[in-house]
Image (cartoon, rainbow, N blue to C red; front, side, top):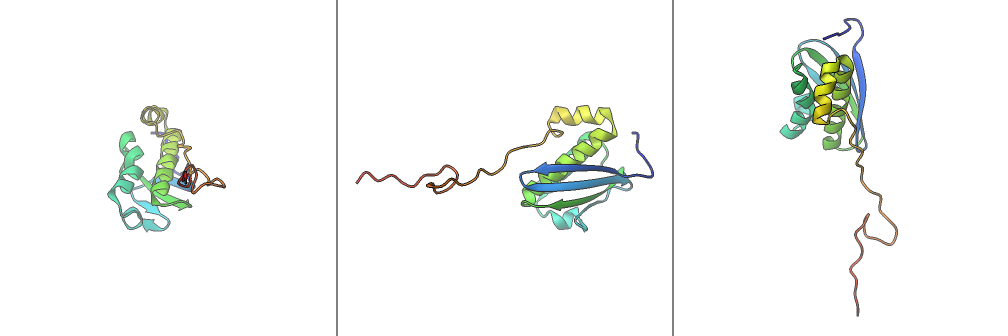
Length: 133
């Protein structure tokens, strides 16, 4: 792995309305999200699994200390944004990692967002009940 000792690797990831900025530097494997540990920030095990997925695929779960700053969205969107940012950082680190992560579909951004409510409707597509009489 070609890593720089002086400068941490920085990447940005997005999911729904959440934006995550990630800094990776060589260390013992600590993940800090908004100045809290990952176990304190994400209470659901699925969210923790989503965040750790690119690290496990690249095989670097213990090699880096990761600092994350995430804003916007809910916890699920934030977990997806962190996963996207970590995938980008690992892909920038080495071309082998990029191939592994791209095969799993983690490098590309998930562009799905909530559709806006339209006038005359109850929600984005839901209409009011039709009454014939």
